[in-house]
Length: 281
Image (cartoon, rainbow, N blue to C red; front, side, top):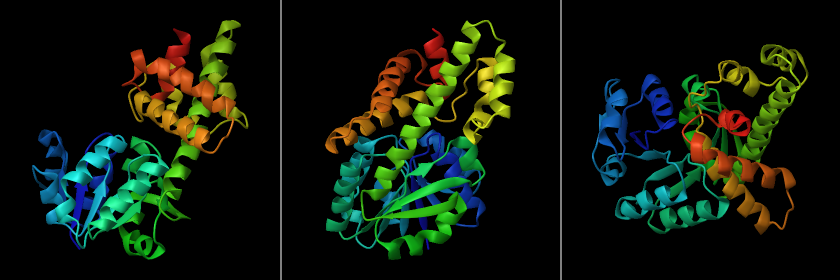
């Protein structure tokens, strides 16, 4: 089975490496061709057009920044989709997912959505949680490859359900991230040492793998990007749109959306934990 990979950003590179390290041949495409080098160094074959990656592959994984980017790629490869399986790992809205599924299926292909929960270090270690939406048989067929990418695959149901799950978990991510930032700022404002506040959270029931993974960022006030803040802001926009569609009132989502949208102006390329810096500013 020939695998293809489209999109070599923060998450795409470590995830594609997992497939290569698992012994699979992978054809890779990225809009900026030079970004294929970390994969070709490991034996991947790079192509300069997305349609070539689709044409030469049986299963094509897509990991792009947003819905318009996914739509642009799939529009450009329509004639190559017959008999192909597209596995979209990108975070897009449920409505966008359904549109992408229709486009692929109307052109003779098979579509599976599998957005992921986790950041770059988690991807490097194959510990992502994979949130699948689509036909159960397609999930089963792709499972050997998904097992290389993550520690658990949860199949939520038909097209749109995996994307809805991703928005739900990213809402929690945004709220917890802002909660940690506000906790530190409140304590520091009262004259408490930040190191002792970090010690307190680490020893408490509020400690989480998220906080543990980002603890040194808070400690050093340095936020190298594991999950860019601008993408967290983008996802919150999708969350607000979905909440409106459901006629839900989500006050924490609305507050987080305002905070991260403002923060991305100066901290967009930093890690999402840089919401701490933005609120500090």
